[in-house]
Length: 297
Image 1 (cartoon, one colour):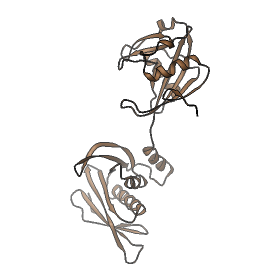
Image 2 (cartoon, one colour):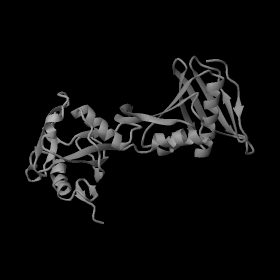
Image 3 (cartoon, rainbow, N blue to C red):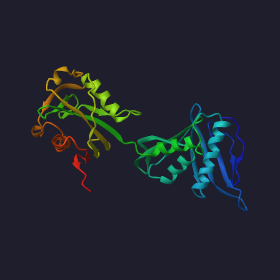
Image 4 (cartoon, rainbow, N blue to C red):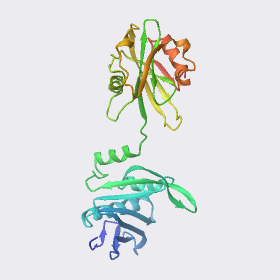
């Protein structure tokens, strides 16, 4: 790191220590009061080439911390030549997380059990900022910061394909015993209908026309999966011979077959055993579901 010089705004003055190898420590004073008073320190430690870890121990409330960390970040990028800064926060320390976000650091993920505190393994939330990121006082910068902290729920798109005898098309998949509907998880920046068609094309070699939405279902956490929203599309009614024209991929989809709604128990998941007979019995209405059961209030 190069030599550093004091930096300030209307209320704060940050006086740096002499660089000690890869570390610069700033003593922070409030200069809008008489006499000026020390409120703590901020440290920038270069951990890898052009990457710095920012830590702070500050009094005076979140406003002081946010202004201080913003000043240090701009100095680190401009004068110290760093290209990325990182903040590591205990996920339970919400005030520190707010300071990181409001100072321009995006939440990037959680390292599970990465810290040992008083003999206890604790998670570490990682917040990062690049030199070319939009700053938090711009519209795109602020929305990117908020987007990094908001929930990201999975969206699943499945297709209910029926034959003229009222049976439903189900797939034997390679990763579980339960028979499953065609379709799957919607990719980032992909709309659900396109995701459903893409999955059918990949799995069965044919993307059948989607005639509408049969159901919208919310799925709670299950066997390691987070919660999700599932959209079940109407794949239409077809002659039973359709199955001969479909081409399972042989990897994810091992086979396909028609099944009557009254014979699904034990072949499909409890979720599909609840909802598929209901959907097949009333395919002309939109079903609003919670974990496979109707939402009635």
